[in-house]
Length: 333
Image (cartoon, rainbow, N blue to C red; front, side, top):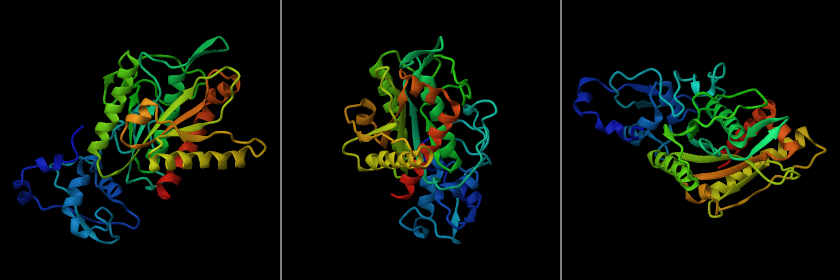
């Protein structure tokens, strides 16, 4: 991925050849959304924009409504921005699968935020494997499906989203039984190693590299797993965070609060028993740079949880509720 300072490589003489384009900030607009509207990828041009307009920004990075700002010079700038999920256009993301590609904009509430999404296991490691009505089901397929649905929710609110574990031919699927495969890769397109430690370190490296490239931006990591406990253990969605990360704890707490509220609304006679707690000994929690939460969405071995996880409408609801918790966290920071 090109660096955020790629702009600095443009020859200085270019500025003499073409005047910089200017644009006026709309009410409530942020730098990320302004750049996107002008066909510029914020991951490449954010730092250059801040440098160009340093004297005209509030707190070094916030726009003043109605003021005019200069845009970085980009020869033959394309009208469609690039993205971590590889869109064909600003709202078309093939990674979501046939018939699911289009992301309809809902708001720009997350336009200044960057999210890294990791679904558990993948490649040579399917995670927990169980039988359902004579068919094999695997943890990684369901964690990936929820992660894609979450990515789509966040994108609809203007966030920049990096899907770290990726499968080019498994988009969002509405079947109950999700077919197993092992062709997932790690962003940008690296084969997933066989060894567990190597797999985890590869994910850590991918996230930490991107985190440093987006230094100064609001960044969060969300890891999604399906738990594997004893067959009789029915669990609600629960969350982990790093014990020393105030922002990670707040993210987990806000998503947890959202689930509590949803259970009170939709299942008033059933207590929500999910928790959020520190779990700093987990490799992904301990070694990644962004504030993060680690989510377990259910127990694949429990028949009741299986029914919940296999239902595509429930997977969509899980993703939506997580996204609402993310919005709550971002806007209450």
